[in-house]
Amino acid sequence: MAEFPDGLAQGQRVEVDVRGIGWVCGQIAWSAAGRIGVAFDRQIDPMLARKPVGQGAHTPTFVKPIFTRTQR
Image (cartoon, rainbow, N blue to C red; front, side, top):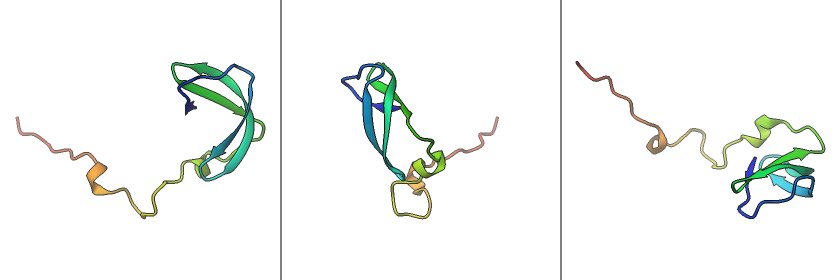
């Protein structure tokens, strides 16, 4: 799934630059509400596409939720 505000016609051929993988050809499987689904022509490793964008070794602490136990 990708965000694409204009939408595309189902079956339209596309080439997508997938982070961690590179350019992959495919076709639009569905398009609705500013999002599209792409059926790639070849299988990709989803773990490569999920690699973090940043260069850090861990998630910054400011984006982690802080949970505390409340006394009742």
